[in-house]
Length: 507
Image (cartoon, rainbow, N blue to C red; front, side, top):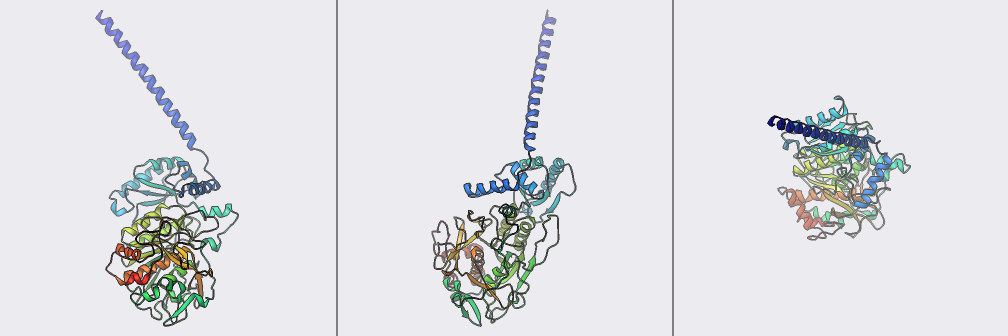
């Protein structure tokens, strides 16, 4: 009797175990089928460039800003696929490699994941930044993107060579960028006598200098002892006032250093910088506006005519489109961050959405105490729906835009405005003329406008303030600039603190 009961319960337990096994197996089979179904869903074809650009534009129009982080795995993979299959990865708890003791092991974990899903171990890494927790890798499969974005130590996974602007131009039927959208131009223009005043020894002071009380401020400060870093398209090799004659006239005891970190190639794997010389014209104009010498040659003078310059050719033009331009800008920010002589960084270039590696570079330079000025944006034919551009919208930068003569809240015809703007600079006359600057070539002059020259000029103003107070911190310089501006202490919702009275800022 007891034996039969034991046998009965044993059979019952076996039956229950078998039932649980079948249920568990069925659940696992369902999960596996669901996972397979999910995997099949992720194996869709990549979106076209037209679809990607269209979604980016629609997001900016409806939400004000586009972010890769807020995009789906499929969307990010599509842009990577359409961008030479190159991805930019930010990892670790910080952007700074020196602040992340396990950065090397994290990087190795990332590569193992890529190797697993890509099924290869060669030709994966394009670059691994020595200062930032950032690397560029070759990725083809959507599964790899999904797996990477799930990793806890990943800060971002982005396309590293998706050319939004190039695609937009193709979609709009324009094969190449025009000077209006790229910021380039080699032309020279004779200056109207109403657009400058002559100052000793024989230099042309742009009309905007009197509007901001810069000429009177020179009695207190000329920028001596302060070094400005310029990230742009380089500086002309045939403009001697930004070269061998940098110390012409009343400018003396200063230096200009020219660097190149741009690779002129459409292929991301290419290496070899193409030099420091400007091949666009934009960088030359920016260097002139902020620090051209107070010369005796009848040429325009810059705001801080005794400041030092460290210039970087980081891109071919002002639109940071593609791998080598974005990489060049990142490198320029990190190198300027590591340059102890540099106090101020000015960049009059940007993008309509954020670029992770550039964001890391900006944060790195900021962490080194640099005062960073970035252009708020100048409209092109297809970006006039955009507000303040990247990286000017970052909290680590001071965003500058251009306004019309005798105003502090009327943006120039092609300038952007918005809540992120910190300062304005008068750069558009009632006549439509902008700021006189040195031309690309010796002995010639030109005009330059937009938020670009407003930014360069404001960086020059910062140099005047810092030169007058050499032991001040970045925040002290910035506070003095704010206190000397139109809307202090209550910034305008679209124009920040407005125009700076430079005389007041240096007294």
